[in-house]
Image (cartoon, rainbow, N blue to C red; front, side, top):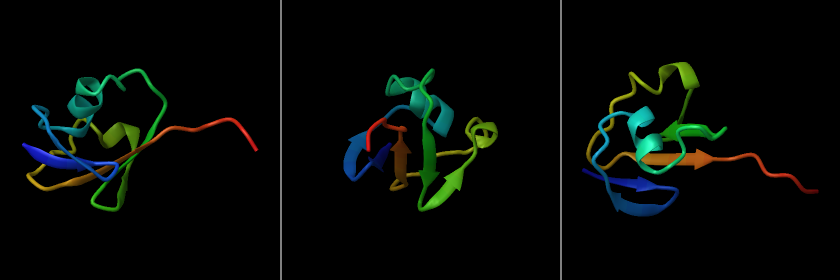
Length: 65
């Protein structure tokens, strides 16, 4: 399915947000996620179904200042 991840169009196999994170190598990472501009809590990622054209944001905390 075609989705946009952090502004980049991608073709993915995943059907849930949790599966998408695993597919992208972020399964064990501490990240914040959003689908179509709506925050998705960690506890909801397994039930959050992806749809064609979804916009996904994956954000990781960074050190610095």
